Image 1 (cartoon, rainbow, N blue to C red):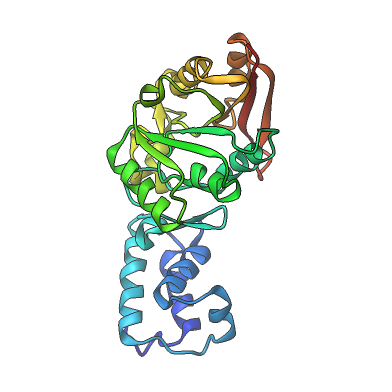
Image 2: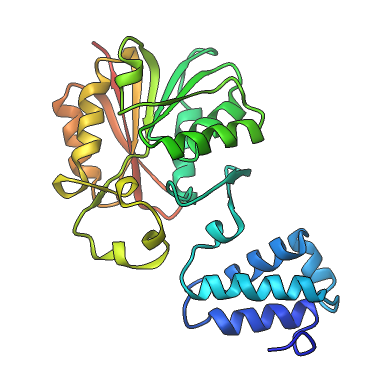
Length: 284
């Protein structure tokens, strides 16, 4: 494949699609995202100027990125960034790539009736996507983001600096350990919830993500149930617990929250109409 064969934007895009068609379920989207990154242009540019030529350096870089995607490497890892809640987040292999479905967690939290300076805890923050998205919308909220993995903590801090949301506190902690004397109006978490034996762990982008951020014992419920139990010691009266989980886990998660004494327990569906997160109120 030579520079002269695929010199224009349209030709480069078509070539990339043909290369990815057999290895990616989102070949068109992947090809476009990588081309936009290579060109450093908005999406409108490639459709307004399809006849524009790539430089030799741009096309070479594009070929290298397409090769990495052919090998299965996630697009977010190739370009080092993923958009979440319309914000750019730096990503790497130390933690999960933010998923669009998790935006329903942010949306649900923002719609809660809470005081203007609510205290919020994000457990297992990873890139910081949830905590920083909330902080972007609610600058008066006092938000603490926690992760056990040191590399994830540094990544969240990097995103905090990049987004200029310096009022968010980012701590390294094994769940509640670093905030054992604090209480919150809202505790939110997207914890590991995939069964350790799930066959999908060997497929797609998750192959390149840390298993510790994906899987939990007891068929994926261990961390969810631990958080639900311990959160009762850190929620203010009337405070909320909001948990993301797998689409088939809602019934058991709701029952667990009811058994633990939470009230007004309900499940919220994501944009694909799948059960995605469950919320409960702590009244005691």
